[in-house]
Length: 120
Image (cartoon, rainbow, N blue to C red):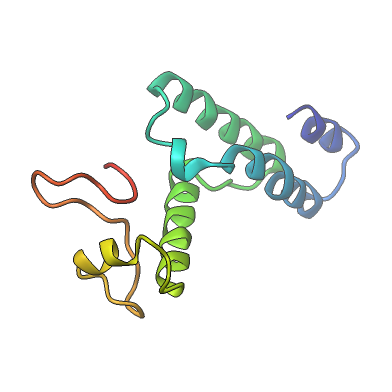
């Protein structure tokens, strides 16, 4: 956030601030988000959300909520798995009646089953 504040102090355009935020700050925050988003404590999750909120104030545009970033990354991962038929998880997706070509959604387990991609 320090670099973002410094850029802002030089009165650079909002587009440059937004580009910096997405390419640097959001990429750091979203690294491995599919694996770790639900396992971090509520206190740490709130800390991350406060960082996003503060960055939004600095850039002057609403930044994507971390939950949205998580869901997009999760969906992208599911599509990558379905696009590669030799992937070991394809049978698990097929057993959930997820058809290739349909819209991919986060998988929710049936009663008594373990979640495949994420827990809700």
